[in-house]
Image 1 (spheres, rainbow, N blue to C red):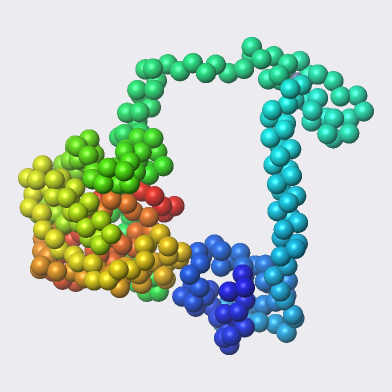
Image 2: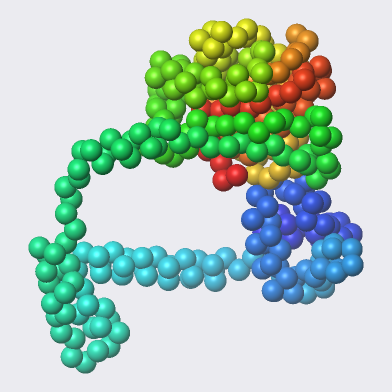
Length: 317
Ligand SMILES: [Zn+2]
C-alpha cells in the first residue's frame, strides 16, 4: 500500500495501468490498496481521465490497527477450533458462548450422537471412477487477445486454443507432474503415455507438422526431452524453435500482466526458422504470458499456427 501511495504522490496522476507497470503487485492487490487509500481520503480519482491523485490529507499505514484486527481474527479462529473439538454438545457450546442462561444438550449433533456421524468407509469402485475422471480431465488454454500493455495482438500473431492435461492441484496427473518435476527431474512414462493418448486426435485435427518446447535455463532438458519423446511417439518431427536469451526471474515472481508479459518478452527469441503448424509444449501454464509471447515470436518468425500444450495448469486463469 505504501508503494502505491508513494507512486501516486510522486507522479502527477496515475492510471491503474501506470501503477501495474510501476509496482510489481497483482492487479487485485493494487485495486485493494486504491480502495483503502480512497476510503481514507489519501487519494482521489479524476472520473474523466481515470487518473488517481494524492490529496493533501496526511496518511500513514496504521500498523497498530491492522495488528489489532489480525489478533481479533486469530482469536476467532482459535474459538472455531475449540468449538470443533468441544467434548460436550456443540449446540450447547454455541448457545453458552452467546449468553444463553440455560444451555442444554441438543441430542442431535456429532457429540450427542456419535453413531450418526458420516462413515469413513469408501467404495473402491467409486475411488477408481473418481481417479479415472481426474485423469481424463483436460483444461482449455485460451489465447490472449491483448498484450501486457493492453494493446490488441493482431489475429495472425495469436496462438490458437490448446490444452493443459491436468490441474496442478489435482490428485490425478497433477500430483505426478509435481513429483516428476521437483523430485525425479524428468517426466515419467505414464505422463508421456497420457499426453500422447490425449494429443493424438488433436494433432491430426489441427494438422500439426512440428513439435517444439518452451526452453528454460534452470532445467534445460526437462521440457525438451519430454516434448521430443511425445513427438517421436506421435510420429512428428521435433525441433528447438525458441531460445532463452536471458535469465529472467521466474514467471511466478511477477505479479501482474504488465510485468509477466514484459518478463516473457525479454526472455525468448525464435530460432531455427520455425514453419508449419506447431505444437508448443511447456510443463506448466499459469498466466498464459509465456505461451502468448512464445507463440507470437514463432508466428512472426514464419510459423503458420501455434497450438499450446501444458502438463498442468497452475493458474487462476
Ligand atoms: Zn448436541
